Structure formats: C-alpha cells, structure tokens
Length: 188
Image (cartoon, rainbow, N blue to C red):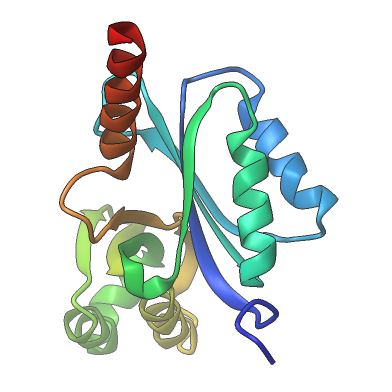
C-alpha cells in the first residue's frame, strides 16, 4: 500500500475571514467525498480578524490534498494546510461531572484524578467537575477509569486545538510572500 492510499489521521488548518455560511460550505466538501470529520474547532487565530478552522480526519494523503485544495477555493479562505500528528502540537480538553457524594465517599476518584494529572474546577454539594487536558487517548482513559465505577454523570470533550511546529504562523509567512509579490507587480 502506498502512502497516498494509506488511511492516516490528518489535521487540516484553514485560515479565513469570519463569514456566515463558511462552516457549512466547508463541511459539505467533506460530505461530498464521504470523509467523516472526527473533530472540528473554530476560533480566532493569532492574527486579528482572521479565524482558524482545525479539522481532524482519517483519510488518505491523496484525499486530504484534494480536500485542502477545495477548502482553499472558498472565497473567504485565505490559506489551508494539512498536517500529520508529528508536524503539530495538539491537545483537547475534557470535562467530567461526578457526584460529590461519590467523590467524598471513595478515595478512588481522588487517586484517579491525581494520577491522570486532572484538576477539579468546581465543587458543589451535588456535583464536582473535573478537567483534563491531553490527547484523546488520555481523556478517554480518564473517562474509562471514572466510568468503570459509575462515577461519571456527564462528559464532554472539545475538538482538537493545534499549533504547528514552525516558528511563525504559516499564514503570516504566506501573507508576507503575497505582499512581496504585490510590491513587485507595483514596481514593474
């Protein structure tokens, strides 16, 4: 099996203007190609007025290249890139709501929380909220540990957030190169 046809996990990062309907148009690109989005997070980027889409998919390199090119064809998208796990630093955040009664009656929860480097962020008489930041397998492991004792009342996990291993935001490099090209055109 070639690397172009081997299914791997990719993270697509797209930079765009904040436009109504863009998220829908981007998700349609995946739907048309029958590629499931495993995780999707949208937020402001480090550049004022520019938003960042972080999308996780399991697909082939050939397909992720095609999808990335299609995303870039959207008018509001400035640039899109795709990365393997080794090319980015990424995390997720998970919240677990457990019964405060169970927390107080069992030292197991405290041990599990300490060993997983999680933290307690809210305690009420009825419930306690635990927060864990890490990779998906780490947040899933904590869920499994807490849930095997029936402690988990609610659970949620964010989508992936990621930064590249490059020194600067890749979009900054792209915009600087584009500005230089425009200056050259004006000079000529």
